[in-house]
Length: 128
Image (cartoon, rainbow, N blue to C red):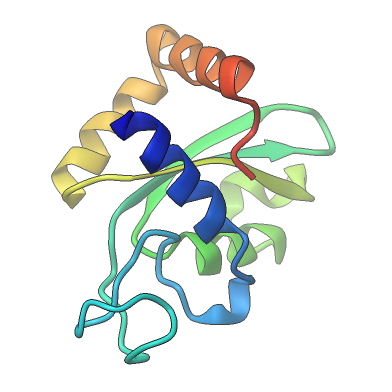
């Protein structure tokens, strides 16, 4: 039941436009409200997967500001994805700390981690 709640929360929050000021889709303001409260957001580490619409390959990465990082990817400011544009966000997950984000990103880049993401997308569909 908790997993379903988190999944629904992610889907609802991902519908916010990138210009809404959200640091990560699940971020909160300093006063605890969501996007409608104080405009100073905590930056929450997120893991995300981008799909290249050019060559249909996935790019696994982490950031504390996923929406602005996606914009940088699509504007060609990131060397590793510059020639793979346009990119689409297909998966995003909030993690508790930067250390956890680094550890999980390394896992996503292994064969087991890639299978985990593929199975998650296959059974629940793309989150975005």
